[in-house]
Amino acid sequence: MTNLDHGKFSRVTTMFHSLLALTVFLLFFTGYAVAFNAELWWLVELMGGNQGVLAVHRIAGFALIFLTAFWVLYMLLRMGGSVGITAVLPNLADIQAFVQDVKFAFGMVDERHPNARQFAGYSADEIPLISYIGKGVIAIFTVELILLMVSGLLIWQQSVLIDFYNSQSVVTAFVGFHGLLGVIMMMGVMFHTFEHGFHPAFYPVEMKAFLPKADTPEFHGEAEGESVTGIERLRLKPSWGWVTNVMGVLTLIGIVSVLIASMDYGGYPISETLVFDEGSLLRTVGVNIGILVLFVGLFLSMYGNVLRARYMRQIEREDRRAAATDGGEPSDAR
Amino acid sequence: MSTNEPTEARLSNGVMSTGEGMRIFPDVEACIDCGGCVVACKRTWDVEISNQRIDITTMLEGHEADEGFNGHQTRAIDEGANPGETHLPMQCYHCENAPCVSVCPTDALQKKDNEFVEVVDDLCIGCQYCLSGCPFGAPQFPESEDGLNAVVGSGGVMDKCTGCEERQDAGQGPACAEECATNAILVGSSGQIADELEKRDSGAFFNETAMEIIFGDDARMFDQ
Image 1 (cartoon, chains in turn green, yellow):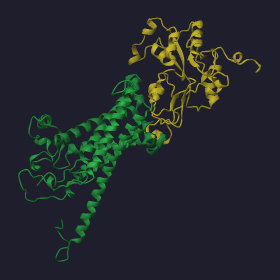
Image 2 (image 1 turned 30 degrees about the horizontal axis):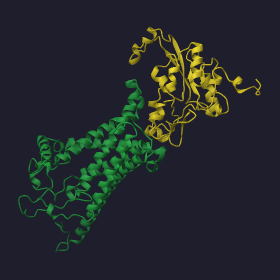
Image 3 (image 1 turned 180 degrees about the vertical axis):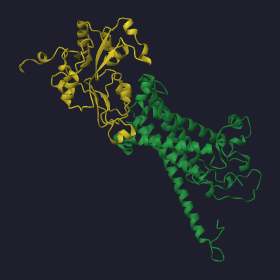
Image 4 (image 1 turned 90 degrees about the vertical axis):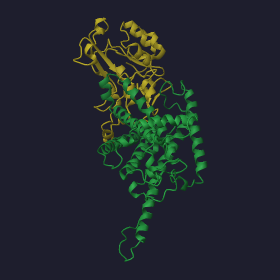
């Protein structure tokens, strides 16, 4: 039994993950189309045009709030079975794992902490289901999404905010906060996409995020040794090398373009003022690359679901082909 | 009045010059809240009944509000500044440093070379950021209750005072200023308006920040 040949998430979790991704991508595409209107002139039209872009953004926003509320209740009620809310909360061992990882990077220790290992040695029963990095991603996304939801709702109800604070400036402050947090979260979503979609073992998609535990075939072969994880059975896809290089170069060009462009606005790397629609070639290149990377994430999210559907059909066909010796239904076809 | 007379002679005293580089600014001491400007604007531009591009705000400076931030705001009257009831014609002042232009994410609000601030309807997405940015309550959203806008809380296309640009291009003053019985809406260059207010001994009423927004560097011309 290894941590590689077992499903990780419940059916609800995988479904939630796909819906959340779709909602967040919609919010990114509509939000960026508004904020970087000059640089993403083509995206506005795709996202409902000037008359519809905010309607799409707000409807997606409410979908996100609904999904999040459902998820929080689901986790609290622990309807997911084995994984409750405690499984995703960081603990002392995670902090130790982080410290050890930093030391490992500087060559001060020989190996990584179990809470940081999912692929390199150790078997499934020796390491936690989610590494400290996975828990960090969940925690960071949760905080970012809550802050984005709250600030988004406040911007939506501007007059309430103005009445409460007796100031108009506060709305502008929340607009700035909402936009900047959106930019920061996009970095996180890109990291998440690279981390799971471009991992050499799982490229192009890590199927655990799409295939529920219940449908994942389990391997219970004899462990060949103490440190066997099953990773040795995986083969690197031929396209992985050049695809990761292309994505890496794009990311680098995107970040450098935006940073250099920000010099024009006074203040580096963050502009002194919120500047929209000044339009510069560098910023246009950078912002469009960002959207392209997000689009790759959206594509991978859909592709994961396509692979899941194909796999489920394949299992179904194999089930139908299997027959019991007496011509009846096989009770143990899988 | 014969139309053969020079244009300047047909302008009211509030309208000193028109067209490129113009400024619109109220003389609050002269405003008597008659509503003539509101009617003139609606009639000239067919502004629907529920919408208005100019509105007269009345401030009762001698009275404290019942509660909240304005509950203890009698400092102005303690200092003897503008005592009593003040009427303020609020409209788009086509500011030099227009905050609405700065906050508009889609470039729908543009400060033109001739100093007018214009809304490009095709670019407006109804986010209402200009509503938060404008200190003078100029942006209006007449379509905010229509269909999907009401459901998702969008403002629809923003509408505001245009400064009667077409009229000014034809050498006429804005409808509101032309109609004003007490010449409380001043139209002209920054210098002309500053001189007129000084002549009338009216003062600029707005604080330094607002004057900086409306007139930019020209704010120095005014007695605060």
